[in-house]
Length: 246
Image 1 (cartoon, one colour):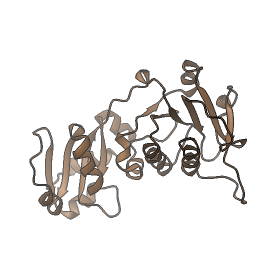
Image 2: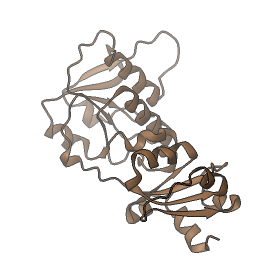
Image 3: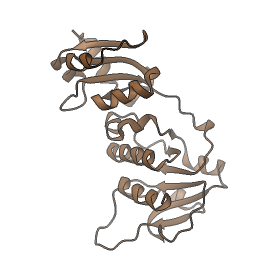
Image 4: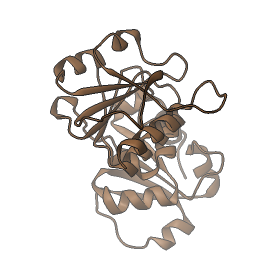
């Protein structure tokens, strides 16, 4: 039986402050936890699971990974999902240090994205297209937000995501081509792509920050034929990457 303090502790990891203090984040669901076990077993701290999951995974885990058996109602108390999926894992935060990152190929840069679903979908898209990394402004939603982790699926640990001041980052890598995704730029289908490069996607409501737009860059757009005012940020990122990696 889970104690009230343990339930409160696990629930607290839904908040960025506590994730950073504890160095842990939550991963939920059969498929995602199985991917973790296969590819990142060394990062798993604890597994909370119901009988059905445990019976299908009888192999012994390393001594540093604790498997805790729960009743369905207990899993519901610690899950962030409306319908819990048999298993939840506490996972150690990976050490992603921007100082060690040397841009190669395509780097996607996100300026103040706020929607967890958008970030999760973008991470998964980058994994699909083989993008080397994502660099985010400090005000972009946290990559280990439970909603981001869920929508990114297993890609959340395959694509490095860094947070840093973007102006400083661009000044440090001022020789690398920059492409701003805007509404009135050159068509992504006629643009001459230079690699390595930064593809910059702005905030869902206000777009790319003025300070970034003032830097020397190439403005690019997805050609429009209909009447919609704009595209969802994750959709735009997918279309742009598809145009580059074809």
